[in-house]
Length: 176
Image (cartoon, rainbow, N blue to C red; front, side, top):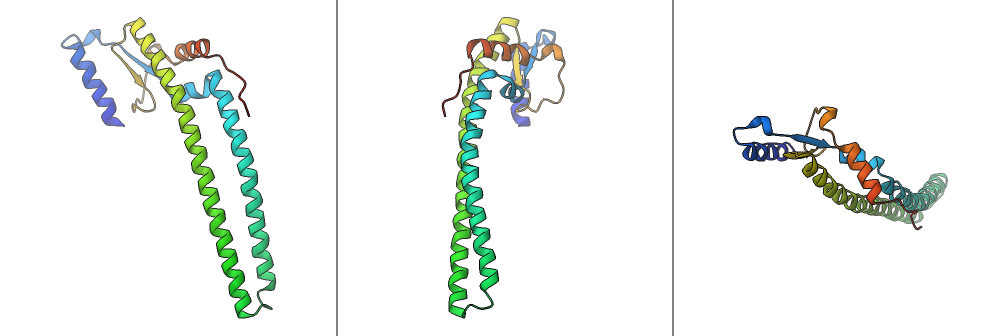
């Protein structure tokens, strides 16, 4: 993370040469922009809807597993050793299946979210480049990935980038 920042800073100094006064730096916060661009809200709602369905199925599976465990605990004292062992194996298989289903669903949701957000970030990068060129910035740093700790509001182009993004990419109602 910091190496990326220092590499950009080195490039900045390389282009500027001895005229450090000519260096103009801008900052854009893609994380904030992802939360504020209109188009992303629809995609987040769609992903949350998908996750809601899966979450309900996983919760149902978890309740079923808990019911089986409770039933086993009530009956364990009266079961024969072979029946108890069979029930324990059944519970173990159900527990493993639950964990695998949960992990798979979680991974798929993270992957879907990442893929959707990458598309937005690519569009935001293009808009940030245009703004940077228009305003004569030597370099535009991404606030969260570049390790930027402080920046003045005068060099923050996030609001302008969000405004242009929303104008170029009108929000649509997500398909379910």
